Image (cartoon, rainbow, N blue to C red; front, side, top):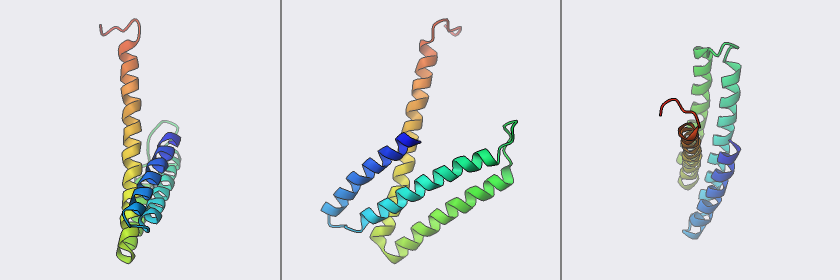
Length: 128
């Protein structure tokens, strides 16, 4: 999570500089809001997953789904509200949310590939 947050912020800073150079000085505000929303959403997701999971690993689906719907609804409402009030800021929020998700997927894919490579390279593998 930490790597994803830092990488997203770094990419967001580059995007903010590009937006200002292209004459869109309010897009960086939206990027910051979007990245902030995404990071907060992910933190709350993690705590909700822990809170709604029993010791046996079973998820209480109804409260967990309600928590997910509420968080995504709030993020969507903020993004669309800002898109309506100030389009460059709104698009920045959407870009910030998307940037975080793409970065998180990238790091998850890297971790999966590393795990698969370790499984293949493990000595004494019975699949050979």
